[in-house]
Length: 304
Image (tube, rainbow, N blue to C red; front, top):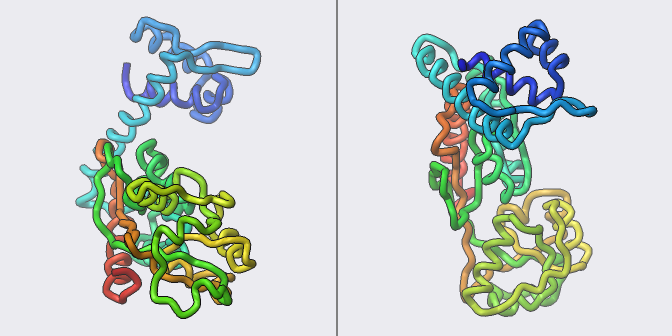
């Protein structure tokens, strides 16, 4: 068994066909079949099944594919590390940014990486913060910004900032007018429009409610930030956001907010990457640039 056989095996699993894999890998189909046979002999078990719909991995094959991806990534990273001293950062780098942070980070990050390292193929993935944790652990992302979660197993994290959460409602809402803050118990009783689980804000609100022995009055679950703010602006309910997030977007001028108090709810922003998987050179270069942008935002008062 060698890395070439593992790469061939992953190609077969990815394409679901030996013939398509052979074409993509530019290997003769009989040679690819022979490599697969030798790999199965080495492991002493069947790794794929040939069906009418194509080639599918067995349970043993799925386990091998999962481990092979990490092994090949580690070897590729080792090759990058050895060459890094004499080479310019290049290749793919995938960064995850929660939707709520996208307006202040995605374009500046893309511009900075492009100017500093034009050979890096940057991919920025925006999505719900709760999914970023899963994507980093699964290897879909090299690094990501996440909101503080209770279980950080398998991650290396760096503190970025802490944000206080606000109750956000329509700009003309009399309930929020002329007040400095709103008690958490009062906010809980209001009809809230929140994202579904997993999501950083949802988890922070529910955790605080659990400690206060209360329950969250969720009127709607919407997994789209701008749509949540639009619904709140239309008077369909309230939501919980940081002040920074509330003031961005098309609906921002039609919203107002109050800090939540008794207790105050904060969320922590972290920069994370997988602990057991070294970052490639390109990802490390993007990581350094992102850290600089985050430091600038903190100094400028965008975060506390």
